[in-house]
Image (cartoon, rainbow, N blue to C red; front, side, top):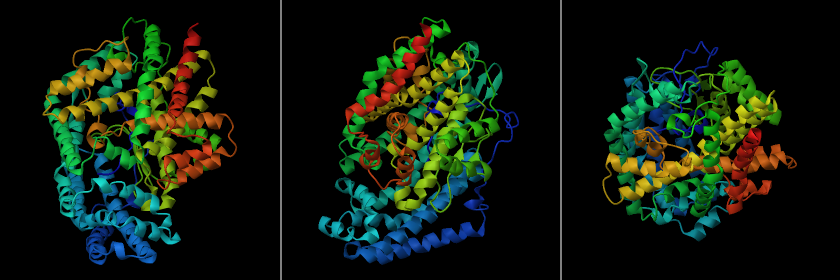
Length: 612
């Protein structure tokens, strides 16, 4: 499965996704040109690469299995180069298959093409499972001596991360079994989830709508439409809740079994290790956000209830526009100019990197039947370029989604110079450039606001996005923690999972909310719980980090742009402590998170002052 980065601002983690509409309503929306990967599924280059991959995987295993500990620096450098070539070819194949699939997830041919490609690559790469297992058995002294050599020294961070899994490594035979079994395990359940959500249909005001179209009504100006959409979402989710409960039960149990065999002390540790972040740092983030609920979400939503003239908010009011907000359709060219202008004002280099996304078919923007929901930026491989997927409907939040995903794209372009092994940024840092791109765009719009009402609208929108990115994601993280803990003790009924979901909702959203019957099923369609367990805290991590970064930029840190680009260019080659040190920041300091949260509180302060 290809990597996906989904912007919470575009969908509030699929709480308010864009609706269907004609591309012509917003100007000429770009489509992907995937020919930089392959020109067609039956392209001779695709068959050539698949055949090469089969041969080279077998040759790599033949040449290196049982011999890694004996390699000197020169031999290790050659081994790494060959492994990177395999990664690149496999990544290119699966990027092409995956991107085609996400353009139309209900197309049986595309689904089969991706599944068949994945099956073949899993088979081809099974002989390579030895690599990490055997590498982790190299004695520490030998490992340190070899990687002290300049020819391989730069790869040491990625192998240090790999060796962090050493205490949780299974036997070679079991690791190979898990590798082979993955295509009918988690990957199959992920696909079932994707195809089910893409095929859901909802009826609102006599019209049959997709999930995308229905969720967008949750931010409509007409409160009646919002309520009708919310109740219809609840009805359809309720009808399908048993299937979604089965997906979550199976995946959580599968993870519990694997974690138990690996002797992982917590379900979250695997994610923390892959993110190269210490559990105590995540715990500090989580605790800081939960402690801030009253001064962030509780306070803001009480203010919003006042604006809407309501004593209590319903779930369909959470993403409602302000009563004074005039609906406005933003054409694609205006969105493009807004984001590129904000990027260029920060640094012409950033706008130059972003420009080809618009000019060369690197963005697929329109809403189309069967297209995957939400938005993401996929880096493909370092020898090609990233692709961005949107579902653009001309809303202000769609502009922020464009800024967010282009930020990912810029980051991925800059990090590509590190090569396949080191370009991949841990999830906690992968949101840095995307959220920073949003912040640049927001600040540009705020500076251009002509009236207090316009400024209020922008501030309120930004606060809601930040609450969705920080408060909501930490609440989602707590839900996942409770879900996996509960599943470890036995099978969970849909009612059990519903109760866990509701246990975090009132706490995070505050006492001003009432929850309609049926809202307890709204966990069912959030993809991160299925595709990437415990991913969601990375959004809060990224937002807090960017808030602190932006405060440093606004304070006039000398040569900030140079330091910023160097951070992005580092990809996954450095630990977060080393990346943040040039800015005088340290994520392991609990006060670091309060600094970021204070920015959100400051925006709410300004909104409250406008009411005085």
